[in-house]
Length: 109
Image 1 (cartoon, rainbow, N blue to C red):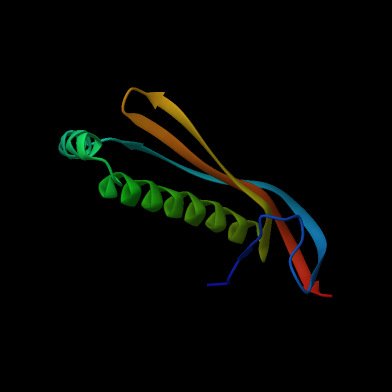
Image 2: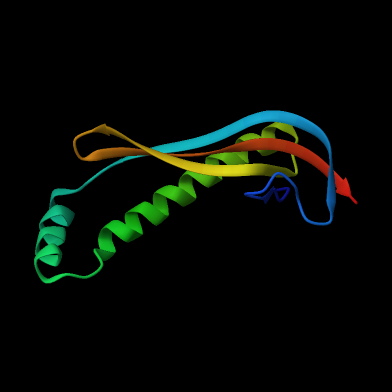
């Protein structure tokens, strides 16, 4: 499987963009779990990190990145530039995480 380089800037260090393939995105929608909500409520009372939610968001972000990268690979890209994330509430207790950027083909500078 070809590696796809991700960059939050609009360039890839040491490489030159030779072709732009277009927008690629990956998303996931996750719902909270009642058990986690109860644990989060008690954590809120005493303060501190809600580790279950931190883990859930990190996993969601990685899944969105993987889906975006898979789409870039399908297009023949070796990099995605201008990578960004956004979130949106879909309904009470569920949120979407979206990763997006521009798929490009690069060569050594």
